[in-house]
Amino acid sequence: MSKILIVEDADSLREVLKSVLENEGFRVEAFPTAEEAFEALKVQACDCVLADFKLPGKNGVELLQQVREFNTTIPYIIMTAFGSIEIAVEAMKHGANDFITKPFEPQALSSILHQVIEHRRIIDRTLGTKARRERSFVTKNPATEKLLHQARKVARVDSSVVILGESGTGKELVARYIHEHSPRKDQPFIAINCAAMPHELLESEFFGYESGAFTGATQTRIGIFELASTGTIFLDEVGDMPLPLQVKLLRALQEGEIKRVGSNKILKVAPRIIAATNHNLEKALEEGRIREDFFYRLSVITLTVPPLRERPEDIPLLTEYFIDYFCNTTGKTKLEIDETALEMMRYYAWPGNIRELENVVERAVILADRIIAPDHLGINLSLNTEALNDAAMSLTEIAQRASRKAEIDLITRTLAQTMGNKTRAAQILGVSYKTLLNKVKEYNLRPDSSDHNAST
Image 1 (tube, rainbow, N blue to C red):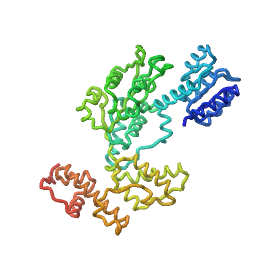
Image 2: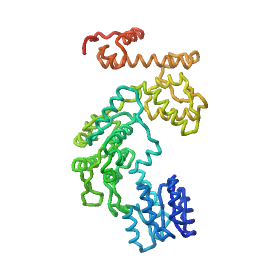
Image 3: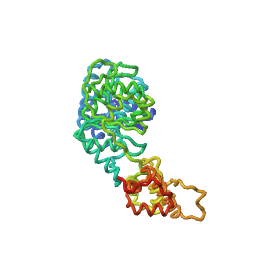
Image 4: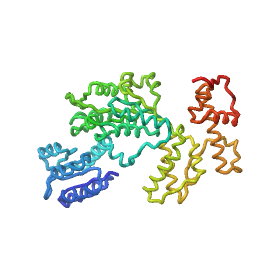
């Protein structure tokens, strides 16, 4: 529910506005003076300020200037008397997002509020970051540590990057990691989900639009490319971007130039582009869903984030990390996790990756009192239930059986990958050659006649 802060000195109109907007589903705080409103803004967040121009003491434009000194992103709408277009223009020059002239219909005001708030939520990722909290990329996995090492190298230059990986693996975290280690770290980082936004809105959000460019375009708005011209743009799920927009985006990347929708004026821009997708890009290229020239312009550097199932050593680390966080946010004393529960987490497949792990831990912290037990997790190991006598087996025995099954599957897949080369397989698995031989013997795995132990 969006929160609106109203500044209106007329008691009757202030109460009417408050009542109307609350009926529209907004939360509302209302003040008679700019001074009172500004004090409130310093200690509480809101999604939009709706201020009259004519106020006792500071007027609405002076309040806008004061607000913009400490908050450059909060949407601000100014109310003016009929015919006061000069005031509206002055307000827009000082950073107002829109204006409305009195008298106005409640529906018109509600429409403007929804537009400016939604626009800001799309392009201002600071709000999203605070909601999700700032997170670091926690890992002990050698492959993932190598990825972060590569990301630090990539951060030093402005080359475009494509990050590949399954949903929930932390592709946006890697993109932010690159931005935060780059010379652009103090500039905007704007992330946009190309799959979540209606395709017809993508062009106007990327490049901005002029007033009157289309129905509902009541004012000129700058787009993402202008806002992040000195920063970084993260294009999540870029594989879902429509082909016509790929052409326009390609030109913007190659020429460093854009045009707002409805304008012929060329604007120079220079954002750093990081894209991500969970699609098979080779297949998307073959099927014509991604243009080759667009793909090769984006993928100067390609990084792949491993799925969580390939990072088993990170599961206890991430579990502890999320337990600490959710205990802090819920006000609970630090919880411990039962060893059997942790074993189940180690051998669960995690199809939703880190995002799923986070959700599982959040649920467990809410349900547990002192110790997180297996039944707090809400996960099921992929076991052959016919091979298990569930009534006779303890949770510890189930976890041990899951461990055995996971090891057999992993060793079998790795040996197939290396065509039976046990030396190479042992290196990939991070164990000694002798340990691998013992495991092959223990699990009675069929020896591969193509084993080349002496090969490199």
